[in-house]
Image 1 (cartoon, chains in turn purple, red):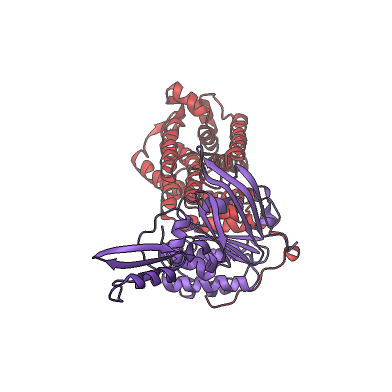
Image 2 (cartoon, rainbow over the protein chains, first blue to last red):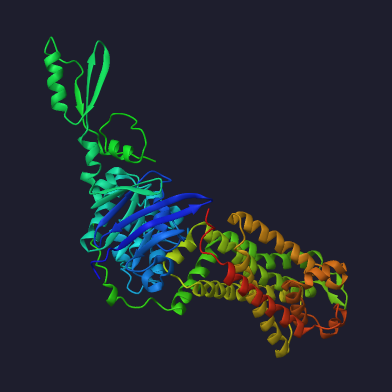
Length: 295
Length: 280
């Protein structure tokens, strides 16, 4: 049983008004791993995850989640999954503690409210009504509700949107804790650093398909071998893309009269550059930043 | 987020999900808590009949209607029926549309909540708020405007079954109309406007037999007219039955129409209820 992947998807298709937002997507998420679906908005991440949660119908393809077809799965299956969706779904007039205490009733073996509050760092806000929480605090509450039923598999759809950097890092700790406990995590994100930080494997989604799957450090290995050599010649920038930058440099030095090459740089594509070429967007600038909101 | 969370149990050791009845009880408690925290709800559906009783009782208190009935006595029957419609039909319809739009129903769906548990929670809330509303309205009418209270047990029995069937019909129809397309705000406006017009058509403010016959016929298709008539049979003297369109209180027909609407409401709910807004 445990050898079967937590999520197994082949040829998934979802159409809206004739347009395929998910277009033949294949995906395997192994038990116990943290898998990040990375992609720009509109790539089909949320639709995919909602089909796997059993709340949206697929138009074609096969999907198995924890060994069952999510389209027809019942309450016992729902008890085994946890969901943190983008919507907040909280009654504004309830306090944080009231929310958690109420929703505990829906689970066969809920985690204690106090543990959840501590795990998401909302100790100061237990008596505050949801309507008065900040966006980031609401996301934390959503995360607490998502793991309340001790799920074997957790879906997180852009979980850290709106969180400040401190809260994001606390959230990352929580995910590492879940992983250490053997929980499988499937999250979507458009933050590269989040995927790199958390995921055992990253799947890049573009135009409704999975275009690459790899551990974050191996993502776009082909593309990353390519280096760009730049220098100044007669006041203009010259640029060469190559698999062998050392050879280019040797030739440059051999051709130089003074033995100096003004403005010389050798850069390799950053994770962000790799990601942008995978999803088919032109790299904006030659920065080596791996952080940033790619929305 | 430094605390370590305890592990997930294996699928084989996981107990069965909690029963529908247990979730329904928790829902009813939650619904009541939320109802009384939502000021708008309390004012528009809960306090409205009491305020209207005071306003109309004060302004038209001296008028006498057909059958020699003082206006406040006639109006109490209508406004009690209206109150039941507001705490059931209007409150439920608006609340569900709002909860759906806010994604609260999505959460219930993701938790595998049985729809019946959700509906039962709403019905429980309607039962308590309607009872509380009538418990305030009747003393106001009696002590403020000298409306006599019936002294036969049979009349109170009628009161209970008419109120219960009316509330049930209102709740199921409220769930049914919440499925209408549009934003929660537009659904709320539509429901409220419909409820106001229906009050005029159903003889809440005016003596029903004096309404134009086309208005009477339209109202006769909908539950409020029958709910109002049932309340008149409780609060008006028996002689006043002669002034009704049919010349009697028509208890059998009242029960029939209200039960029919309960069934229609449930059928529509089963076919149209959605946890989330339609796919875009």
